[in-house]
Image 1 (cartoon, rainbow, N blue to C red):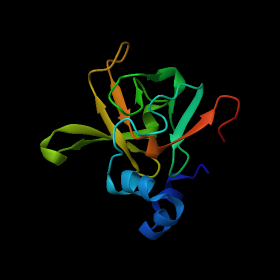
Image 2 (cartoon, helix red, strand yellow):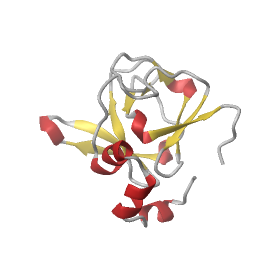
Image 3 (cartoon, helix red, strand yellow):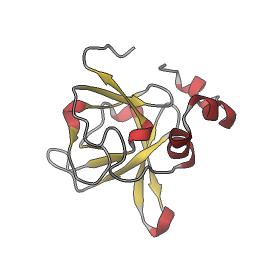
Length: 140
């Protein structure tokens, strides 16, 4: 399902609502979050790649996934820094760094500076924003 950024950004909200489940839409398009410890990838450690549920953009790999205990999938690095965007988020009375898909602007989660070495980062990402591709399958 991988799309070019211009194709993904051309979608209307109605297009997104048809493509995504209500939870995926809420998380990726309305900057929502899933309840902690409910996402399918929180305790998922199969080898493979995690892609954007909305456009198929490669985001993370299992090599950087770890169990943080935060209730959401956690990664200490991205697959490629050019495939995500970071933006200051001042919602809910906090100052955080929002993580977005660079191809389609989907909200993925947030990044924090309390992760393990070597990066010291914790990308706290909603399962609803991700699809998983097992290592045996090739990413297009």
